[in-house]
Length: 594
Image 1 (spheres, rainbow, N blue to C red):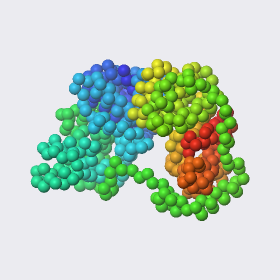
Image 2: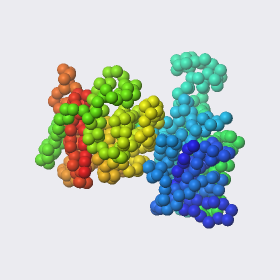
Image 3: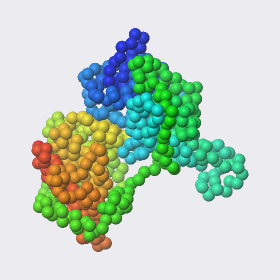
Image 4: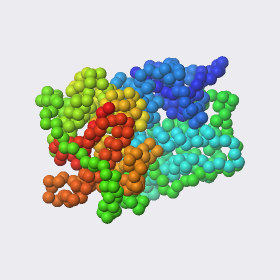
């Protein structure tokens, strides 16, 4: 059975109803559970409400009637352990813990598909709807973060003569205005138009109007031609907006959203609309933020040709232009600023001559060979795992909780679980497919000291003793280090993708006080990070040795900044290199102890 942990703020007095004040995410999940499990929800999903004492009530809370659910209540943050591991909402099934709205919704929908005799098919083509995590997919981020923020803004609007709707509403309108884009487009055209084509060239030869396919009119639902989980999430959110500002008043500005909203509302005989009505309390006294706004003018900016399937992965150069090149004269000038700091920039060679474990005793499934790696990567991956495993074994004590951050398919975490049976290993990964592959390997090994976490790094809140990461990409390495500092945990971190560092609300650069107080500008710091990715095999005759040596030096600069920040928290940090050093070009390792 699925254990679903939802946040609530307070319980309200009512004679006939059980009313709770909840955040938007909790309301969405209640609606989804009722939609997929209209009868006997408790057979498949146990709903647990965990009370949170925060000031978030002001951020668009909703009063819902939960009397129709058989639920367990945990008051005043006296929560069971699974509710404390990650940011709520959280889902637990067996040893798998999921945090993040879209990941939880997917797990509930997949469970519905497994247990229902006539399941609602809402996971899209090959079950890929909202599969990519919010850190990677603009579409998942929109459904998990952006539209929720948009709803909260609308719920907090005050009575006024005119208002401007959040920009994400305009983005959704523009997205729905784009031509249909789906993976199995030619199969769909064949079925709808009674033709037989398999390529754009064949489609272009269809001359008769009756055979042509309207890519705009057939973009009916959020992700394409058929209703998916994304439509459920978005509908529940837009339904809240509609209660404050009737969509009919926005027909000229948001025609595509209104058409889409009516289509979803009428589907399944209006079941989803009825569920929303049943859940939300009708008392305006208890819920003034859902009272209809009487405004004369409503503005919304709708961007041209905006698609939620696109993303911009380019980086900034020194001049602020979005290009990938860096001028060498500028780099040398920046490196002179580092020299002025008069600190030891460098990493030590790996002096561990004897492994702390024997590969011959490790089962095949716990070796790199068991993770379906290409043969040409096996030896290099073995050396990488060997270096990090040795350091973790040296630090670990019986009973320790060790987190393998960005664990992928579990190469490092599974090896540690076998080598350290007296420790508990958390595998934390935000990609569902990778997590499932790790689970399959562990089931074959028969080990019981692993807990799986599917969530973004910033959702993870559990206590642990050692944090480890092998090639966590860009800013992820800094988030891992920050998690370790917060928990006073030891760490073994091998960073990667230095050039993908970028400042955000969650992470500012430089990291240490020394670098922050220097004359180094942010754009110059990011330039060093970009140069740190210009490393190549020094034994290759085609390698620009000067450029590569500079790249390795720049890696050491960024890692020195990271080490200095940890030292501010009382850590002793060692900067080492993997062995052999050519097992990866990202061969630096940070080891932190207290």
